[in-house]
Length: 112
Length: 110
Image (cartoon, rainbow over the protein chains, first blue to last red):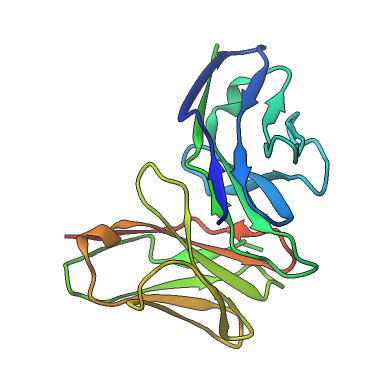
């Protein structure tokens, strides 16, 4: 069975401090991992995905298959980073989208 | 491109009624997935449509059904509504593996 765990429902850090949002998964096959973000009054939007290995808005995430983790990190938090963050997993396929399994989300608050 | 659009924005129904939610995918996208998001939870996969057929289905009862039209738009139907069906219903469209979400339809069942 596929499962995504985000152990922190709430995370509060000060502006300029490093941020790490934790995500652990369980899946027997080869997963594709995503981070989605939802800013206040906006729709859920894709932040990054592990296969693209890119940095978006200063955020990075590395897939650690040994620890089955995909933590989201940013070295210096900004107030505009305050949002709800969801980690999601799908089965890796050559083409086409597979169902996403989401974690419960972490609400990140950046204090001034 | 307005991206993924959904209608209506909000809906109030009573137990036992039936509801239809609509989704128009992002331009060029051929696959539509539906998710249910209960308050305080992450989205849960309901089903996915591709080439007008249900390709995958999550753990939802048969009361939840769907349809995809030749223009790739989609409908989600829920029969015999229960109080527990109150949630935000999200539609996501895709062409490759990344899914793009609509704003959702907030369904309240009284």
